[in-house]
Image (cartoon, rainbow, N blue to C red; front, top):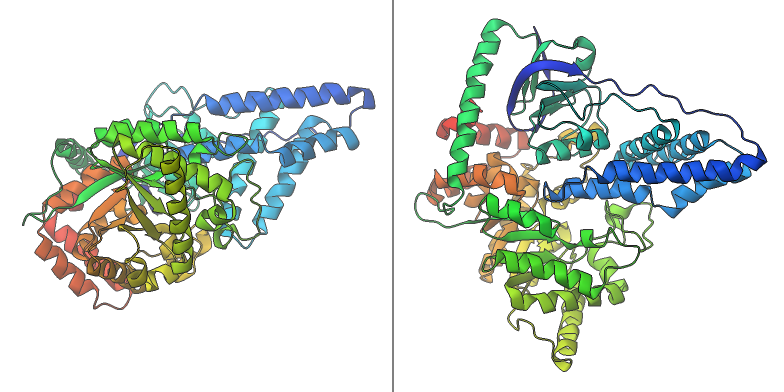
Length: 577
């Protein structure tokens, strides 16, 4: 028996026979072509681009999750990127490279630039370019990688790594678990396996080399362990844990129609994060109390120009109507950083700290004004709230609110109906905004804490960088003190606070966040029931006592250990899954 320790990327237990996934060893052809063959080679390349696009598009499932859609859109945009396409065509026309050679050369050049970047988000895109380049070479050659789209039996997929497109294409009915040598919790692979709800352990080192097809293996996506050819006793123990976990999942489904009320009557709201109107059904299916975050920027990603007012209005109205009378909080466009939108000319060395979100909106008021008009128009169809991202201080907030009032005046002048009492809020995801929370709270109707960015900005750690992944700690005392301060300052002005980062979806942190005074949690729809079950089983008083104890501690290791033990002592299902 071998036990490998890795990163628990997607919760659950899975056991079965291993399928060792081997990537294509295909090497692009490298030869020159004759001048008279240029047009034919260009045509072959363009046909390959269309074929690659169709292969990706057929795997698009709009209601599975917000982030998978973002990843797939990124790949589709690469295949439409004028710079990428034109560079490849230049190699064919000017240097007489065959199409495969041109694709390989340009793709590897871009990969080298990304790998040399100081920005971890950009480095993480290396796998996307590798994936797209492989798709193009395969389309040109007619060859393909190992097919995992139609399996005949249940398997545990084992590999050194997986391309995002392979995860989209794989047979999700028969792949019961995934074990990979590489990857991190914030990687695209991790995001996808969580969205597909497949138990997975990543960063296992060299586990794939120790596995053969058909080996009995177990993936423990709770504790981050991978068992190869487990001994009978270990298999039996894990088997019992597996049965208990399945029972626990069935119990969660009973929570759909129950309110999120703690044992002493304290009420909380659990809402869903979405990016398309197609995800509303999933939010309802898991009993969401509303939409806590609608990522509006993804409406812009499938257009060559900024999304039209009508296009946005129809999308917003559909979500607001579908969720009524429950609230829908729409975040204004947050492009830049790790989100690229066609036609908006965003190209920066360090986009995470650059021209993004409200900074972009205030310099492109033509785009921002159209969005605000569409939002106002849709507000009469339900309970719409508007949220502004990446506010760093009062000057930015004042500028945004001033423009918003101007757009409202325009709508009044044009006799366009809208909700005059529409609520507006700001995300708190920049340390400067956290420090000024008392000032900002006087100007808005609610706060939403974006912990994904707040953590990385507070600790100065790229969340996508595997080398320093251990530093990305939600339980860092500095992060927790910021969260507590934000909540306290908001409550002093009688405004509610939501939290919409991955931290909200992690049941380990649920009671602590409630104890810190959080009013609303916003998460992927599939996480709602687990968090609801935990919060219903403790009192608000207990949660506050936990928070008070934690806030006296001085390290994330101490805090994390304490919380894990506290949770295990109180929740049977936290021990057994």
